[in-house]
Image 1 (cartoon, rainbow, N blue to C red):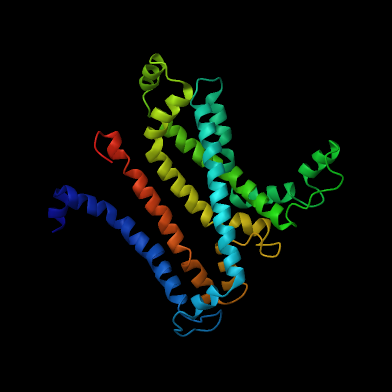
Image 2 (cartoon, rainbow, N blue to C red; image 1 turned 180 degrees about the horizontal axis):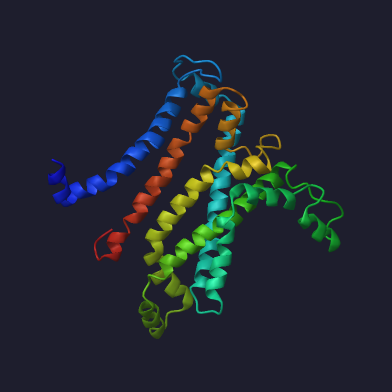
Length: 299
């Protein structure tokens, strides 16, 4: 049987995928299944729980803090993803032009993505510090403000601050990925459009954007997934404060499960994130259908 599989093209592909499948089954499927099960129990740290059905979810439905975390997560993901896409596409188009030291600039842009998240968060923690913030110092030196800004102490400023930190960290991934997509677009298409009198905006709208759509779908899906499940940046900067203003579903799940000891409730919050993540995956799937258009078929 093994020889028959190795001689078949599909069988050979199956054999190559088998180790990865076993790895995913052990380290992804089992934790996911365990988390779903815990969401239906009253398990706590040090005590085995019993099955309680939907009680955790009913409790969350009436929990104002949970709904604040849902709002924060949606706002955080939407604003940060839009900014990362806009700035990342802008940088990608700049780096796609002929310019001196282009490779050096590409390497520099990657630095925020390469640096560990905790180190980035600590750097922003100092940047946003209520007493020693470099931003407050510069604004005071210019006479714009008279006292330091409490970036992480005010709810609205705290939301804006963590979004800014996430955008700074996520732009390199979007920019480099879109740059790779831009370099696959034949330059002859732009040259032909320019000869026909098309403006830069028309070439971008009619050539660049349609051909870049599949890459945009994949990149934005991963960007949304990374942003929606962000934990380290928020936990280091604010731990969900002030007054739950920056609590995301991921940080609230951790707080309820580990420091709070309520594993079942924390697991229920984590499971509640799954529908949003599935929606992002479906967005990628339908975006990839544009490849049929590129290959001459119908959408």
